[in-house]
Length: 544
Image (cartoon, rainbow, N blue to C red; front, side, top):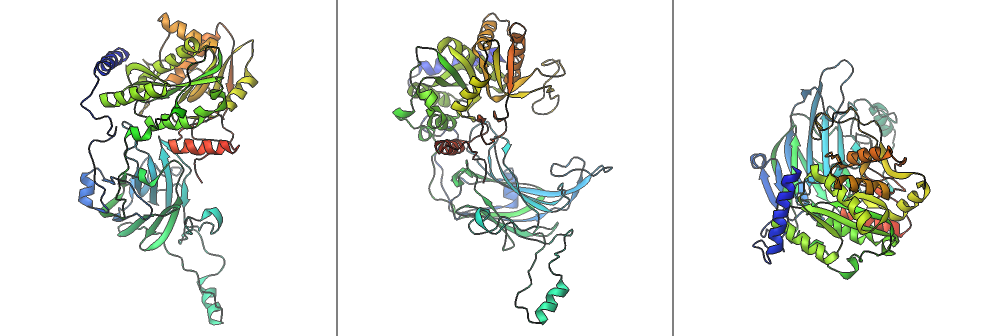
């Protein structure tokens, strides 16, 4: 695979270098071609939705005031042996499940990736782990879910930040396992007969029933989404940092539901451009400084995909402006391989030429070849910059550069090398599923100690060892680059002591307060984190 990727990459590089013009208009979007109308309303029947893989396109996203109405009927519960939303009782082989999902998705995010779930609404009639009907709300970016908001029939707080445009997050409905101890129906009517003015509180049943038609309306407000069912408000969900209404370019409905029709109204009439040229801000202040001639404390290599223009731009505008980078103590560069699409590669070359912060590797990008980028980062760190430490991170990782440097100062030693990050011990290879590793690829039962890939640091001597071993063609490669680094550090440890330092602050999943690095951060979350750092707060922007 590596040889084929190098061959195709060199061929593509040669074609781009020789051609001064291309028949593709690289000023157009990387993810779409041609122009597109922005209808103010869209409707689909259930049959039309089924023929389009249960997805209705919203070409120009949503705007405040937009609403989507879904008319459908929940299917009757069916037995499942391994339910995704519930858990089996002891001794049971199956559980009865009836649940469906209504999602707003960002279909125009990035080619080749699962679209982010801008808003995820999951009514669970039967089968939830709580054994009660619930409605779950959430969002997801690059397979990283936020904190779920679960409405289970208990009303939420009615004041402060818990309100969304004045609405509570969860309304009350009747639950079979709870009886309102404040007053029964008998005492309520008795008090009314003796002159009490207070009206009895009305509690509605769970808004979905198997086999009964529902009308669900999802409305975009100023502060969040509002869900009405049968004309009654049921729940509200705050907008999450990192997503905008314009990002919601598709509606997906899946699960145990028969959809009869879908209507989207009050849609925006103007089209937002998805062109990389609109994402890339060609301004002098975002250009990288030339490499310093003197040694530096740390080099940061950022793994990035070819068409992640927005991610790179967000990093340039945020943590790449850190004082340690501007003072030449630290240097950061993006490491990018080539795309199968010539037009995308041409935009990448223009981006690299202007900003001066991209190292283009002439092979076709592929997950199993990410390890080659890691080797390139080590080589750049020890040859081009002579850095004391080399850090590797991803383009959806936000780095608190000063915090990482402080951690290095606290844990470095003249008597040992350093390998620092969120360490994994005694992890076993997955032998089944999407990320399966065969016995031929990794015959051992466990992996060596390794730091999670979104952010880790190694000392210069480990990086130099990797480069030397690769040059002599004696470096063993494995498709998981973070495991490869653990393997190389273990080999180096046989000749010189390596200090392994573990910290949860190199966050693998999302963000934690006081982080060194935060992973799965969207471009808008990067801006949010940087703004908070500017106010002296190392706080997260994952959710409200």
